[in-house]
Amino acid sequence: MSSVADAAAHGAERHHPDLVHHFESLPAQKEAATLGMWVFIAQEVMFFGGLFAAYTIYRHLYFHAFVQSSRHLNLPLGAINTAVLICSSLTMAMGVHASALGRRRATVAWLLLTVALGSVFLGIKAVEYKDKFEHHLVPGESFQAEELHLEGPAARPAQIFYSLYFAMTGLHAAHMVVGIPIILTIAWMAHRGRFSPEYHTPVEMTGLYWHFVDIIWIFLFPLLYLIGRHH
Amino acid sequence: MSSSEHIVSPVVYVGVFLALMALTGLTVFASTVDLGMWNTPVALLIAVTKAVLVVLFFMHLKYSSRLASLAVGAALLWLLLLIAGVVADYLSRGWVGSPGT
Image: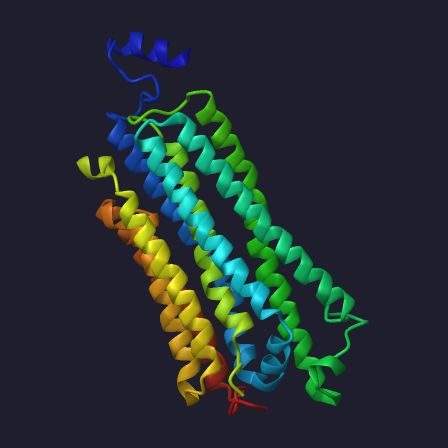
């Protein structure tokens, strides 16, 4: 409604309905959205960066405890989850591709597949978390380092590893929990025919977010699961 | 800019996907081999390679404007400053000794 009023006010009847009045053209509007999204991602890099900096220091200080703790993580599940997330990045890229070509049903199908894969990832993560609770590897009063073959003072840094493990994978999982309803909303909008080859910016921006979350995991997997496996 | 209209072929996406899967297998394999001090650098190099593939092709940075690349460059510079600053602080106070304690 407002775009009709804007068009009338500016005397430009041929404006695309999705072009807001303060942009000159759809490409300029998309360029601004893309830059904004990348600046948001830069902020996200800082957000996770603090945890990566803490990880760097503590891994260096307590390398032995980190190796022993890392070995107790479930490598097959971690590797499967990495593959699941890479698959979900492919399906997301295909969804953006389909929306750029104006293929409505394919867009919805790819986006729903992405949500399904994201849910599988979170399910596997829940299984891993449950295992850590059962083995008393959650930092706090009940933490037990016997299973990590660590005793006395050497056991305490293991809590630092598991604190970082839960903080980093938890923050990552939180981003996926946020991402899934966003993708579902976008899929609903695509189903309703809100996007076209000229205007599908929201699909692209959602894709940028999802791929960023994938990149975080690409670093978390070797840093948490693959320490000192060769010893 | 006309670059915003660039449409990447699905063949490229599948190629990137296969490369990412292969690199995941490679990083798991590399972690089981004793490379001395090089295990961590190799793992990070593989992770950076995977991230670059995702950023360039899945996230279309290769086809986006220079301004988007500038935002990515700024993010990496600030991340580097963050980690270098923290590490330099610990090193200069002598709080970080030899690894393996």
